Length: 237
Image 1 (cartoon, rainbow, N blue to C red):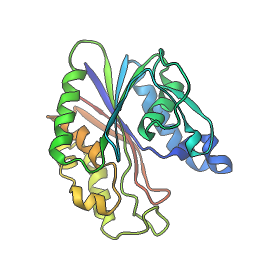
Image 2 (cartoon, rainbow, N blue to C red):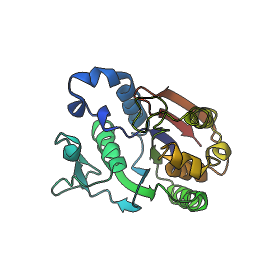
Image 3 (spheres, helix red, strand yellow):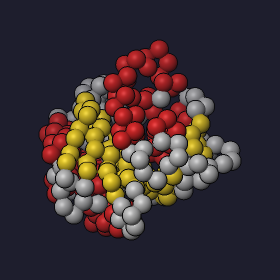
Image 4 (tube, rainbow, N blue to C red):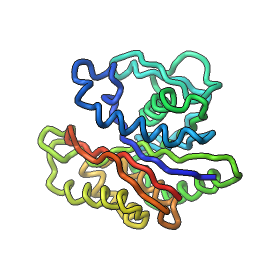
């Protein structure tokens, strides 16, 4: 049974060991992300959705490490995870594992990475399929979307500044804050690709998982400290 859907961004800089002396700059973001994890701690499983170049699924038995991002910070995706940490795990799985280890170590985390160029219909269908799995029995389960907003919001952003990104980012923020899956699923895939809103496919999956608007929607963090849109919040079905 789906008890909640949370969403968090994916920047490795949320891990203090990767951020060095600048770690304090992300204290508010980190606190909001960990609070989101704690809000899901009453569940037995998290179904995680993220977006990267290659579509794949990472099981809850996997272990990973942030060594590829500059520090050997290990993570586990479930209580039965074992073996050598894999530095090649996709970033959404690493971030979800990092949150799990610190807020809900009893939880199993299965990560579905959808390709960034996936069309809306594919993402919507995946969202519906995941919702059916989450609601398949009475065990409490959660959906966790690990995705960023546009990466072109300021001149110092990773994708530099694109004047079109502000309106799209505002539409994304409004859809998340108001719990509007129709507006969330209406993000233009081509435009999102051009403004480096690579999380669009994951947001589409979230929209597909909610055939009806959530009973409540709460955003606890919404900012672009490095020119990239970061959103943290909870939808309750």
